[in-house]
Image: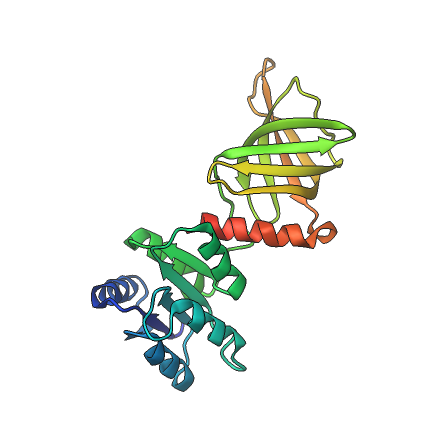
Length: 239
């Protein structure tokens, strides 16, 4: 990997030092610059090339949200990956950052493991987002042919999900089109998502198995607005 340039923007000097040290110790081919406010960040971005920006949402002079808006509307800088750092866990703040173009939203206080796992995606030039699977607690509901069934959500990605269902329920068939809804314990909910059944298999390798695992693939082309809702949920789950 060739040398990459990273800009850190945070009011707190100890936070800048912490991030700089974490990057230097884990990504040896990265050059780090840091600034203490939004004006300095803007000037740096206009006069230098950066491969990634890590910016605190509460930055002074120009806040992180406004800096992100400016960056994404810039004629030549709009493609620079931007990661928002914030102590604000409010869902609306997370969704706003995503919709404005942030690649990730990392909650403070920062930890080495959390920071490095996020930076690895961008500093190693490999975007795992489309393959990344999440395992939140929650329920999944299927509606098909005037029937409904409810199961436990096992995992979810941008492309689909899998759930655990009682074998005695009325279940969809492989290849069947369904509507699905999600209710996550993190209070993220989404309804009326189109999909079709990819796979049904016994959850236990026993003749007396009581549950089946059902894998669903989303058909986002039917409801593109639902794809956006899902992207916001997945983005929030990474915080």
